Length: 352
Image (tube, one colour):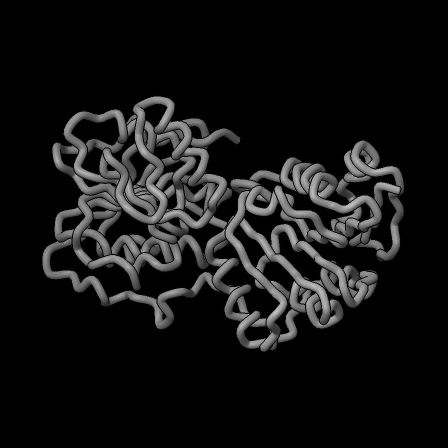
Protein backbone atom coordinates (compact mmCIF):
# COMPACT_ATOMS: atom_id res chain seq x y z
CA UNK A 1 0.00 0.00 0.00
CA UNK A 2 1.44 3.38 -1.04
CA UNK A 3 0.92 6.63 0.87
CA UNK A 4 -2.43 8.15 -0.01
CA UNK A 5 -2.60 11.27 -2.20
CA UNK A 6 -6.24 11.90 -1.22
CA UNK A 7 -5.29 14.56 1.32
CA UNK A 8 -3.38 16.53 -1.30
CA UNK A 9 -6.42 16.35 -3.58
CA UNK A 10 -8.96 17.20 -0.87
CA UNK A 11 -7.60 19.65 1.71
CA UNK A 12 -7.98 23.31 0.80
CA UNK A 13 -5.53 25.70 2.46
CA UNK A 14 -6.12 29.44 2.74
CA UNK A 15 -3.40 32.09 2.81
CA UNK A 16 -1.67 32.23 6.16
CA UNK A 17 -3.03 28.86 7.27
CA UNK A 18 -1.32 27.25 10.27
CA UNK A 19 -1.09 23.53 9.51
CA UNK A 20 -0.45 20.67 11.93
CA UNK A 21 0.70 17.26 10.67
CA UNK A 22 -0.16 14.56 13.21
CA UNK A 23 2.56 11.87 13.05
CA UNK A 24 2.14 11.68 9.27
CA UNK A 25 5.20 13.46 7.84
CA UNK A 26 5.58 10.78 5.16
CA UNK A 27 2.22 11.61 3.58
CA UNK A 28 2.62 13.44 0.20
CA UNK A 29 0.36 16.20 1.57
CA UNK A 30 3.30 17.68 3.49
CA UNK A 31 5.35 18.34 0.37
CA UNK A 32 2.28 19.57 -1.52
CA UNK A 33 1.40 22.00 1.28
CA UNK A 34 4.97 23.31 1.39
CA UNK A 35 4.67 24.29 -2.29
CA UNK A 36 1.54 26.36 -1.77
CA UNK A 37 2.20 30.12 -1.90
CA UNK A 38 1.09 32.04 1.14
CA UNK A 39 1.11 29.11 3.55
CA UNK A 40 1.56 30.29 7.12
CA UNK A 41 3.50 27.51 8.85
CA UNK A 42 3.61 23.73 9.02
CA UNK A 43 4.14 21.99 12.35
CA UNK A 44 5.34 18.41 12.04
CA UNK A 45 4.20 16.68 15.23
CA UNK A 46 6.26 13.62 14.33
CA UNK A 47 7.48 10.66 16.37
CA UNK A 48 9.59 8.85 13.79
CA UNK A 49 13.08 10.23 13.18
CA UNK A 50 13.40 8.38 9.86
CA UNK A 51 10.18 9.91 8.50
CA UNK A 52 11.23 13.35 9.72
CA UNK A 53 14.66 13.11 8.09
CA UNK A 54 13.12 11.90 4.83
CA UNK A 55 10.70 14.81 4.52
CA UNK A 56 13.40 17.31 5.56
CA UNK A 57 15.70 16.00 2.84
CA UNK A 58 12.92 16.18 0.24
CA UNK A 59 12.03 19.76 1.20
CA UNK A 60 15.66 20.83 1.11
CA UNK A 61 16.09 19.35 -2.37
CA UNK A 62 12.85 20.77 -3.74
CA UNK A 63 12.74 24.16 -2.05
CA UNK A 64 16.11 24.83 -0.44
CA UNK A 65 14.61 24.68 3.04
CA UNK A 66 16.80 24.51 6.09
CA UNK A 67 16.55 21.43 8.33
CA UNK A 68 14.04 22.36 11.04
CA UNK A 69 15.39 20.25 13.92
CA UNK A 70 13.60 21.39 17.05
CA UNK A 71 13.05 24.97 15.90
CA UNK A 72 11.78 26.94 12.91
CA UNK A 73 13.30 26.65 9.46
CA UNK A 74 13.68 29.60 7.14
CA UNK A 75 10.36 28.75 5.49
CA UNK A 76 8.26 28.27 8.66
CA UNK A 77 8.39 24.49 9.05
CA UNK A 78 8.68 23.28 12.64
CA UNK A 79 9.07 19.98 14.43
CA UNK A 80 7.62 18.93 17.79
CA UNK A 81 7.69 15.36 19.13
CA UNK A 82 4.21 13.91 18.61
CA UNK A 83 3.86 12.59 22.16
CA UNK A 84 4.87 15.96 23.64
CA UNK A 85 2.70 18.28 21.56
CA UNK A 86 0.20 19.07 24.32
CA UNK A 87 2.91 19.77 26.90
CA UNK A 88 5.09 21.84 24.55
CA UNK A 89 2.68 23.83 22.36
CA UNK A 90 -0.11 26.33 23.13
CA UNK A 91 -3.77 25.48 22.44
CA UNK A 92 -6.06 26.85 19.73
CA UNK A 93 -3.39 28.05 17.27
CA UNK A 94 -3.95 25.70 14.30
CA UNK A 95 -6.28 26.13 11.32
CA UNK A 96 -5.89 22.70 9.70
CA UNK A 97 -4.77 19.41 11.28
CA UNK A 98 -4.22 16.25 9.22
CA UNK A 99 -3.57 12.63 10.17
CA UNK A 100 -2.89 9.56 8.05
CA UNK A 101 -3.86 6.35 9.85
CA UNK A 102 -1.27 4.40 7.87
CA UNK A 103 1.53 5.76 10.06
CA UNK A 104 -0.07 5.28 13.48
CA UNK A 105 1.31 2.20 15.31
CA UNK A 106 -1.95 1.46 17.11
CA UNK A 107 -5.30 2.67 18.40
CA UNK A 108 -3.76 4.66 21.25
CA UNK A 109 -1.80 6.73 18.73
CA UNK A 110 -4.89 7.40 16.61
CA UNK A 111 -6.96 8.43 19.60
CA UNK A 112 -4.17 10.64 20.92
CA UNK A 113 -3.97 12.32 17.50
CA UNK A 114 -7.68 13.21 17.69
CA UNK A 115 -7.23 14.68 21.15
CA UNK A 116 -4.19 16.68 20.07
CA UNK A 117 -6.25 18.08 17.17
CA UNK A 118 -9.06 19.09 19.52
CA UNK A 119 -6.48 20.83 21.73
CA UNK A 120 -4.57 22.47 18.87
CA UNK A 121 -7.34 23.70 16.54
CA UNK A 122 -8.83 27.16 16.65
CA UNK A 123 -12.65 27.41 16.66
CA UNK A 124 -13.64 26.85 13.04
CA UNK A 125 -10.49 24.81 12.37
CA UNK A 126 -10.65 21.46 10.57
CA UNK A 127 -9.27 17.99 11.27
CA UNK A 128 -8.78 15.82 8.18
CA UNK A 129 -8.13 12.09 8.60
CA UNK A 130 -7.27 9.71 5.76
CA UNK A 131 -7.25 5.93 6.04
CA UNK A 132 -8.56 2.61 4.84
CA UNK A 133 -11.25 0.44 6.43
CA UNK A 134 -8.67 -2.11 7.52
CA UNK A 135 -6.76 0.67 9.30
CA UNK A 136 -9.87 1.65 11.27
CA UNK A 137 -11.03 4.79 9.49
CA UNK A 138 -14.72 4.02 10.15
CA UNK A 139 -14.21 3.58 13.90
CA UNK A 140 -12.02 6.70 13.97
CA UNK A 141 -14.82 8.60 12.23
CA UNK A 142 -17.17 7.57 15.05
CA UNK A 143 -14.69 8.87 17.61
CA UNK A 144 -14.35 12.13 15.69
CA UNK A 145 -18.14 12.48 15.83
CA UNK A 146 -18.03 11.90 19.59
CA UNK A 147 -15.18 14.36 20.20
CA UNK A 148 -16.11 17.14 17.77
CA UNK A 149 -19.88 16.67 17.45
CA UNK A 150 -19.72 16.45 13.64
CA UNK A 151 -18.24 14.37 10.84
CA UNK A 152 -18.39 14.29 7.05
CA UNK A 153 -16.83 12.12 4.36
CA UNK A 154 -15.10 14.24 1.72
CA UNK A 155 -13.52 11.69 -0.62
CA UNK A 156 -13.33 7.95 -1.29
CA UNK A 157 -10.83 6.34 -3.62
CA UNK A 158 -8.60 3.27 -3.98
CA UNK A 159 -9.76 1.81 -0.70
CA UNK A 160 -9.09 5.04 1.19
CA UNK A 161 -11.36 7.78 2.44
CA UNK A 162 -10.93 11.29 3.85
CA UNK A 163 -13.17 12.35 6.73
CA UNK A 164 -13.34 15.78 8.32
CA UNK A 165 -14.51 17.28 11.61
CA UNK A 166 -14.79 20.98 12.47
CA UNK A 167 -13.99 22.42 15.87
CA UNK A 168 -17.07 24.37 16.79
CA UNK A 169 -17.10 27.67 18.67
CA UNK A 170 -17.32 27.17 22.39
CA UNK A 171 -15.69 23.74 22.44
CA UNK A 172 -13.16 23.52 25.25
CA UNK A 173 -9.71 22.56 24.04
CA UNK A 174 -9.05 20.67 27.28
CA UNK A 175 -12.35 18.78 27.36
CA UNK A 176 -10.90 15.51 26.02
CA UNK A 177 -7.27 15.69 27.04
CA UNK A 178 -5.71 12.41 28.19
CA UNK A 179 -4.92 12.10 31.89
CA UNK A 180 -1.25 11.69 30.95
CA UNK A 181 0.07 14.03 28.25
CA UNK A 182 2.44 11.25 27.11
CA UNK A 183 0.06 8.23 26.82
CA UNK A 184 2.13 6.71 24.01
CA UNK A 185 5.14 6.01 26.23
CA UNK A 186 5.17 2.24 26.89
CA UNK A 187 5.07 0.72 30.36
CA UNK A 188 8.17 0.85 32.54
CA UNK A 189 10.72 -1.93 32.91
CA UNK A 190 9.47 -2.68 36.41
CA UNK A 191 6.12 -3.85 34.99
CA UNK A 192 7.82 -7.08 33.93
CA UNK A 193 5.75 -7.30 30.76
CA UNK A 194 8.24 -9.03 28.49
CA UNK A 195 6.98 -10.52 25.26
CA UNK A 196 7.91 -14.11 24.50
CA UNK A 197 10.50 -13.27 21.85
CA UNK A 198 12.32 -10.80 24.10
CA UNK A 199 12.39 -13.34 26.93
CA UNK A 200 13.99 -15.94 24.64
CA UNK A 201 16.58 -13.41 23.51
CA UNK A 202 17.50 -12.44 27.07
CA UNK A 203 17.92 -16.10 28.01
CA UNK A 204 20.19 -16.76 25.00
CA UNK A 205 22.47 -13.74 25.30
CA UNK A 206 26.09 -14.21 26.28
CA UNK A 207 27.27 -10.97 27.87
CA UNK A 208 30.79 -10.28 29.13
CA UNK A 209 31.48 -7.93 32.03
CA UNK A 210 33.42 -5.44 29.89
CA UNK A 211 31.28 -5.55 26.75
CA UNK A 212 30.43 -2.39 24.87
CA UNK A 213 26.92 -3.21 23.62
CA UNK A 214 24.40 -1.68 21.22
CA UNK A 215 20.63 -2.26 21.17
CA UNK A 216 19.15 -1.21 17.80
CA UNK A 217 15.44 -0.41 17.99
CA UNK A 218 15.50 -0.47 21.77
CA UNK A 219 11.82 0.28 22.44
CA UNK A 220 11.33 0.79 26.18
CA UNK A 221 14.83 -0.48 26.91
CA UNK A 222 14.14 -3.93 28.40
CA UNK A 223 17.02 -5.60 26.53
CA UNK A 224 19.57 -2.84 27.01
CA UNK A 225 18.94 -2.56 30.76
CA UNK A 226 19.32 -6.34 31.12
CA UNK A 227 22.67 -6.21 29.29
CA UNK A 228 23.89 -3.21 31.32
CA UNK A 229 23.37 -5.14 34.57
CA UNK A 230 25.62 -7.93 33.25
CA UNK A 231 28.21 -5.68 31.53
CA UNK A 232 28.79 -3.73 34.74
CA UNK A 233 32.31 -2.71 33.68
CA UNK A 234 31.24 -2.05 30.11
CA UNK A 235 28.61 0.17 28.50
CA UNK A 236 25.32 -0.01 26.64
CA UNK A 237 24.03 2.32 23.93
CA UNK A 238 20.34 2.11 23.07
CA UNK A 239 18.92 3.68 19.92
CA UNK A 240 15.43 3.95 18.45
CA UNK A 241 13.76 5.95 15.68
CA UNK A 242 10.71 6.60 17.88
CA UNK A 243 10.99 9.65 20.11
CA UNK A 244 8.33 8.22 22.44
CA UNK A 245 10.37 5.01 22.76
CA UNK A 246 13.54 6.99 23.49
CA UNK A 247 11.76 8.88 26.27
CA UNK A 248 10.38 5.62 27.69
CA UNK A 249 13.80 3.98 27.60
CA UNK A 250 15.41 7.01 29.28
CA UNK A 251 12.79 6.94 32.04
CA UNK A 252 13.41 3.23 32.61
CA UNK A 253 17.18 3.78 32.70
CA UNK A 254 16.73 6.45 35.37
CA UNK A 255 14.49 4.12 37.39
CA UNK A 256 17.06 1.33 37.11
CA UNK A 257 19.80 3.46 38.68
CA UNK A 258 22.34 2.16 36.17
CA UNK A 259 25.05 4.60 35.09
CA UNK A 260 26.50 2.73 32.09
CA UNK A 261 23.68 3.35 29.57
CA UNK A 262 23.21 6.02 26.92
CA UNK A 263 19.90 6.38 25.02
CA UNK A 264 19.84 8.16 21.65
CA UNK A 265 17.25 8.92 18.96
CA UNK A 266 18.57 7.39 15.76
CA UNK A 267 17.46 6.25 12.32
CA UNK A 268 18.71 2.69 12.68
CA UNK A 269 22.32 2.78 13.87
CA UNK A 270 23.01 6.08 12.07
CA UNK A 271 23.78 8.02 15.27
CA UNK A 272 26.54 5.55 16.29
CA UNK A 273 27.95 4.62 12.88
CA UNK A 274 31.44 5.77 13.89
CA UNK A 275 31.51 3.67 17.06
CA UNK A 276 32.39 -0.02 17.46
CA UNK A 277 30.79 -2.60 19.73
CA UNK A 278 31.49 -6.06 21.15
CA UNK A 279 27.82 -6.99 21.25
CA UNK A 280 24.89 -5.84 19.09
CA UNK A 281 21.29 -6.96 19.68
CA UNK A 282 17.93 -6.24 18.08
CA UNK A 283 14.30 -7.25 18.25
CA UNK A 284 13.38 -5.52 14.98
CA UNK A 285 9.90 -4.45 13.93
CA UNK A 286 8.52 -6.10 10.82
CA UNK A 287 5.74 -3.65 10.10
CA UNK A 288 6.25 -0.23 8.53
CA UNK A 289 3.27 2.02 7.92
CA UNK A 290 0.95 -0.92 8.54
CA UNK A 291 2.72 -3.07 5.95
CA UNK A 292 4.65 -6.25 6.75
CA UNK A 293 8.25 -5.83 5.65
CA UNK A 294 11.70 -7.28 6.33
CA UNK A 295 13.51 -4.18 5.11
CA UNK A 296 14.06 -2.63 8.55
CA UNK A 297 15.54 -5.82 9.98
CA UNK A 298 17.78 -6.32 6.94
CA UNK A 299 19.02 -2.78 7.35
CA UNK A 300 19.71 -3.43 11.06
CA UNK A 301 21.69 -6.54 10.04
CA UNK A 302 23.87 -4.57 7.62
CA UNK A 303 24.46 -1.80 10.15
CA UNK A 304 25.24 -4.30 12.91
CA UNK A 305 27.94 -5.83 10.70
CA UNK A 306 29.44 -2.36 10.16
CA UNK A 307 29.66 -1.39 13.84
CA UNK A 308 30.57 -4.80 15.27
CA UNK A 309 34.17 -5.46 16.25
CA UNK A 310 35.89 -8.41 14.51
CA UNK A 311 35.40 -10.80 17.43
CA UNK A 312 31.97 -9.48 18.44
CA UNK A 313 28.53 -11.14 18.28
CA UNK A 314 25.19 -10.04 16.89
CA UNK A 315 21.88 -11.41 18.23
CA UNK A 316 18.50 -11.05 16.52
CA UNK A 317 15.13 -12.38 17.63
CA UNK A 318 12.32 -12.75 15.11
CA UNK A 319 9.10 -14.57 14.34
CA UNK A 320 10.02 -17.98 12.96
CA UNK A 321 8.39 -17.38 9.57
CA UNK A 322 10.63 -14.39 8.81
CA UNK A 323 13.59 -15.45 6.66
CA UNK A 324 16.50 -13.36 7.86
CA UNK A 325 19.16 -16.05 7.50
CA UNK A 326 20.17 -15.13 3.90
CA UNK A 327 20.68 -11.48 4.89
CA UNK A 328 22.74 -12.57 7.90
CA UNK A 329 24.92 -14.91 5.82
CA UNK A 330 25.61 -12.08 3.38
CA UNK A 331 27.18 -10.04 6.22
CA UNK A 332 28.57 -12.63 8.65
CA UNK A 333 30.67 -15.83 8.39
CA UNK A 334 28.91 -17.64 11.24
CA UNK A 335 25.11 -17.76 11.57
CA UNK A 336 23.32 -20.12 13.96
CA UNK A 337 20.04 -20.48 15.80
CA UNK A 338 20.79 -20.50 19.52
CA UNK A 339 17.25 -20.56 20.96
CA UNK A 340 13.64 -20.67 19.87
CA UNK A 341 10.26 -22.33 19.91
CA UNK A 342 7.44 -22.79 17.41
CA UNK A 343 6.79 -19.03 17.24
CA UNK A 344 10.18 -17.33 17.64
CA UNK A 345 13.85 -17.91 16.93
CA UNK A 346 17.02 -16.29 18.28
CA UNK A 347 19.83 -16.04 15.72
CA UNK A 348 23.47 -15.35 16.56
CA UNK A 349 25.96 -14.11 13.99
CA UNK A 350 29.69 -13.44 14.06
CA UNK A 351 32.28 -12.26 11.57
CA UNK A 352 34.73 -15.03 12.49
